[in-house]
Length: 221
Length: 376
Image (tube, rainbow over all chains, first blue to last red; front, side, top):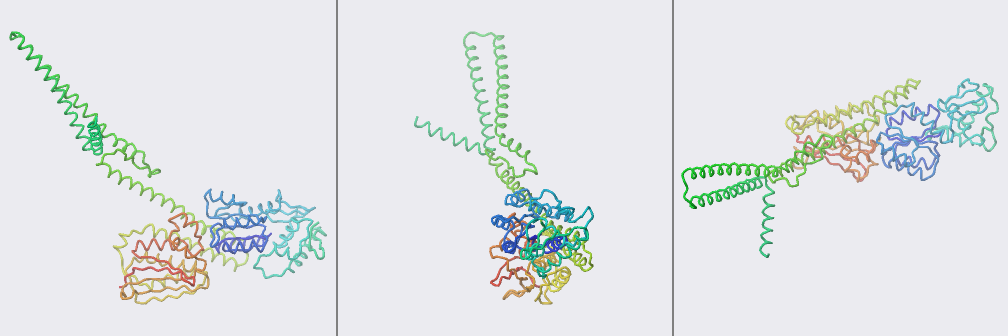
């Protein structure tokens, strides 16, 4: 899942990007409105965490531009502005959720997970395929009820493939979804992750879940 | 007909003239009551005298009849005096009550003025001229009180808003730091948390300094302050929490002393320098200069310059209004080169009797100049 954090407080950005990356999300950071506008032109984000009081272009203008572009990106507004009219303005402009600073990090993560479920029209926080179940809230994968020891990237790749079940996703497309703009890794890292993931799934008794389609990428049927 | 119109107009003008003043109104009322009383008294006496003369000269009157007549005259005169006094008192009471009616309305309105609704002024329509200035002044004071309360409300809201971000930083850094397994990562989070806490402390201390600063008391307690030593001491402390690593050049004569309030001067420096360090672009040099006035070396200006490439010239007037207007608060986010610091600097300058000016040059460097210092 690819997230864009638009926040001018560098300290808050450090805390949030670190925490969300630990969860396996690919997080890009924009410190001002103009950078955010450039980022949403280049990348397709699943979710944007947006501060309203930004240097350059205000947060509401970023939101308006995003909605005008008809992108399916979910938007969680994270602002120190706590007045009802601020919430109403943001929600009317197309924000999907609004959280006031200071906030509980666990609550932020829960809201992010909930918005991502809505992004893919899911009603439950559980993604299932046969005996495999992914809890998108706790970000834990289980087989027959036993937890799989997956790294955040392995979990993110499995979640992405399950969310796009039946579709083939190329290596660059998966890399784009799993890694943020600052990453120095090449998209070949996807092959490594798929390999270790397959091994862990096989050890849990699940074989052939991830198919390789030459020239098309990977898919879960 | 022709002469009644000017006469009627004259009466209206006269009544209007009399109505405008409480003194005139009361005087006119008393004159009217006395006039009416005298007229009534005159009528009674006339009737009595006429009857007495008529009866005395009509036929021969024996002494008993004359005594009865005189007793009757005494009683009627007494009744007349009592009636006149009663009418006079009633007329005066009614006139005074009517004259004081506008004051009654003012008193009722004054009772409705409350701390929640101070802007509700007194109704001054029809109020006598003597009371009018008092009412006008009172309404002005109420208006100022309402403005002050509105300012306090906005200040409290802005303060709460200003503290939300550092509080969110501290909380998020703490919660994210707890998940860190490596010592280096944890150390970095603790460093950032400390810096956020120091920043929050700075916000609170600056606002307290502004709240406590009293211009008159400050002007009476000025004392010599060593500028270079104060700047270097403050810079050393700021460096402990500064993560920008921006180079700083201070060009201040070591022997420079100015007359100021040491506590407020330090608060001034904290906000001025922290603003330049935090909101200046990383890597750009922060310059601190003392500029003596040409031809008057005892007068000088302290100037701090920092790069502010994201700042626009049209933003300058709003930089000092962060807390004074909703617009300033909304349009100037913390990292726009115009944090709370400049607002505090502006308020402290006003207390210290200094003039503050902002300038954005062609190379996009923001100069904050404090003029009005007197070197010792």
